[in-house]
Every structure is written in structure tokens, then in C-alpha cells.
Image (cartoon, rainbow, N blue to C red; front, side, top):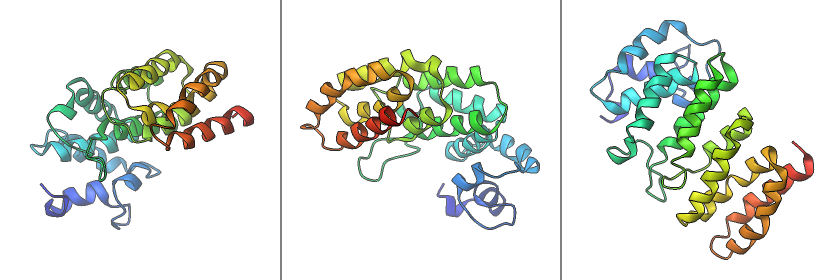
Length: 219
């Protein structure tokens, strides 16, 4: 169902702020304090026949640190929802960015709530296993920069290599700034590899430059 056709109460649950103004799902995820009165209705909608509605409820609840939301996103990852639905088709490339968006919601839970960090870390590790095969625009990159989870370093290195193996050179380069924060020596060792790959995709230069800023600045 097109969001514009949702019942008003569902539309407001997903997209309205505390004053009833339509601000969009992203802003609802950032609502502070969390509108606790919305949680039961959002949890109920996780069982909606409209799987996209349920997905959006999962994103909001996960960002708020609500277990049912985290569990719903986990289910989508484990069942490989990208193989049966297109929740986040990229407007230019056509590939589904769903796991990138899920990673962002999880990082919000880790940053802004007291939800179990180890549980979210394990789910991010599972998402990193999909990095080479699936499309990621940049949200996972910034999630990893925001939450700083050094125990994911082996998973990040593996994700970079698998992305390279799949010919996703720009996507692999997105992890360079993350590596600069987590493992400076390893990051520096990647520079020659990715400098050569700029002939394949000029956008790699942006991530090389951003990585250098982290290396120099010691963020």
C-alpha cells in the first residue's frame, strides 16, 4: 500500500511528531523523549499484513530501543528480506538499500538508548556478512563511525574484502574511514590498493580523502 493511502492513525504513528505535524519517519526515530504511548500500537503493527508497514514500525521501535523492533529487524536480516521484497530501492541504482537503513536504526538504539550493546553488535556483525553481496549506500559506514564498536574489526575487514571480491569497489572504499578509526595500520596498508581502483570508480577518492582526515586527525 502506498503510504498516502494508509489509515490516518497509521500514517500519524509513522510520520507525525508530538504535535501532529508530518515530519517523516527519520524524524520520528529521533523523537526525544520517546512517545511511550505510541509503542503498543507500533508493536501491534509489526504483525500487519502490509510488510512494509511492519518494516517501518520495526525501524522506529528499534531506534527507540524497543526489543520488539530489534527482533523484527533481526528477522528481516535472517530471512534475507532483500530476496523477496524491495523496501529501500535506490532511486539511481535500483538496488535495495534495506540493510543499510536497518543498520542506521540499530546504531541509533546503541547511541541513544540503554539497549543491550552486545545484542546490537551481533546483529551488526550479521549485516556485515551481507556487505559484499548486497548494496549499501553509506548508512552502515556512518553507523560504525558513530557507535565505535572495535570488536567488529574482524567483520569489517572481511566485509571490505568480500566487497572487493564482488567488484563493489566504491562500496568497499566506504569502510576505509571506519578502518582509520579502528585499525590505523591496516587502513594505511589499503591506500595503494584503493588508489589503483580509482581508475575503476572516481568516487573512491572521496573515501580515501575522508580516511586521511581520520588518520591525520586521530578521531
